[in-house]
Length: 58
Image (cartoon, rainbow, N blue to C red):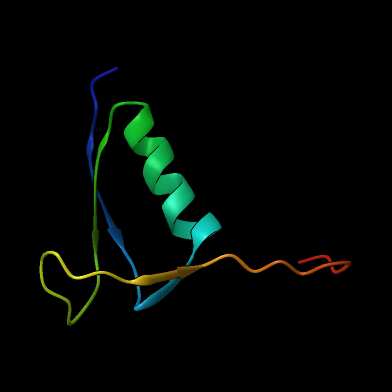
C-alpha cells in the first residue's frame, strides 16, 4: 500500500487518544501526517492531555 498524505484539523487543546495516538499510528504504517490549527503558524504547537476518568465510563 502506498502511503497517503493526510491532514488533521485540530484545535488549540486536544486529547492524546483523539489526535496524538492516531497521528503516530498513521505515521507508523507509512502515511505522511500533518496537523493544522486555525490561527497557528508552521512550527507552533498545541497542548495535549490524557484524561483519566477513574471508575467512570466515557
